[in-house]
Amino acid sequence: MNPVEIRPGVFWVGVNDRVTDLFEGLWPISREGISYNSYLIRDEKTALIDLSKEVLTDDYLAQLSGVLDIASLDYVVINHMEPDHSGVLVRLRELAPNAILLGMPKTVRMLNDFYGITDNIEQLSNGQELSLGKNTLRFVYTPFVHWPETMMTYMVEQGVLFPCDGFGGYGALDGAIFDDTCADLAYFEAEALRYFTNIVAAYSKSVLSAIGKFAGLPIEMVAPAHGLIWRKDPGRIIELYETWSTYYREPAEVGITALFGTMYRNTERALSAALDGIEAEGVPVKVYDVRKSHVSYMLSDLWTRRGVLVAAPTYEGGLFPDMMNALAMADRKHVAHKTAAFLGSKAWGGGAQNDFEAMAQRMGWDVVGGFDFLGGPDAGDLDRARAMGQQLARAIKT
Ligand SMILES: Cc1cc2nc3c(=O)[nH]c(=O)nc-3n(C[C@H](O)[C@H](O)[C@H](O)COP(=O)(O)O)c2cc1C
Ligand SMILES: [Fe+2]
Ligand SMILES: [Fe+2]
Image 1 (cartoon, rainbow, N blue to C red):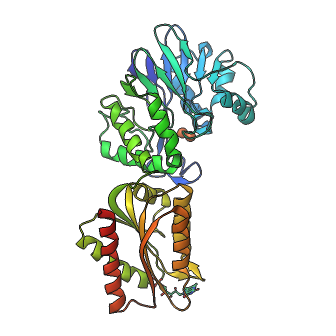
Image 2: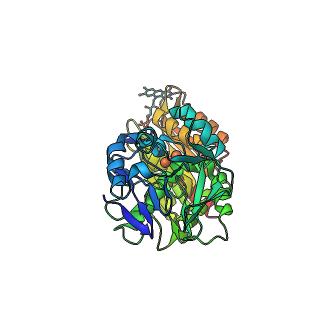
């Protein structure tokens, strides 16, 4: 894609990553891709905000050289040191040896730790401003969105916020880079949610505190380092992130995520009965087979729905392994304030239910029902499953 002038003198010079299969080595993006958005401000002085991952260095520099004599670059604003944004730095410095790197104190240390860079650095303090000519950049320290050094940059005169990972999302940009020109906004919002739950949600409190730091400031454009640029409705992505972040401390929306795993379909039959019970209460449910879906996708629903139904058999005295892994990731991401229920098949001593209950207790979930049964579910087990589904649905409606 070519550079795009997103505001007078401000250019998107990002690149799309359609090569990486697992973002952060964990989260599937084979189908979706991701963009590393970078921004160039051409004023009396020139500044780059956020960069790109190393694997795309050639693409990035080619893109940049279309709108800048790279050797003349004055500043590089480092909102965040994660290598998906700083990976091109060593190469960039070879081409622009006089450029000054700007970042918070922890960034200064990390520049040395990651790249051995110790010179041409200016350490910033929270709220510090830098005039580029017509435009002023203000650097706001927003720790733990989602690393300790993370900051956001606000372009004062034009009301543009460069929040780096904050307000970002998965999904390569297919030509259109704005909220009002992309073909499928709902898709990008869903991918922003998945990105939020995968990358940022564990630091929801920090997100809310970062949002608070910009309250009352005019924001006419949100230009994150991943995903769409929000110019028609910049408040939209901030509101979404704000709403999602509140779920770390209070119950989320009315709805259930049903996770199931099964070897021989006995558990699945009982699950179907439980789903009938949920349906009878008119509560929306999203079903995931933990063997077939990556937990990355499950997290979007686990985070935003207040109910969880776990259906899995006993395997070697414990919970079916893929289910254990899914719940362990939910725990890692601090999925809390859930109302939950369990069912599963066993052949002798069981053990899955115990593991589930231990995990639920760890995460502070409120368990409203749970049972296991021997072999295939009989009529009584199916009735019980149906009733438990209904009970779970009722519990989250009140
Ligand atoms: C490898 C393996 C290990 C198992 N371990 C246990 C166990 O420790 N305790 C138990 O009660 N059942 C155990 N079972 C039996 C299953 O829980 C039982 O077959 C159940 O009906 C499977 O449910 P599903 O049809 O939903 O897969 C095991 C089954 C397999 C294949
Ligand atoms: Fe990051
Ligand atoms: Fe990132």
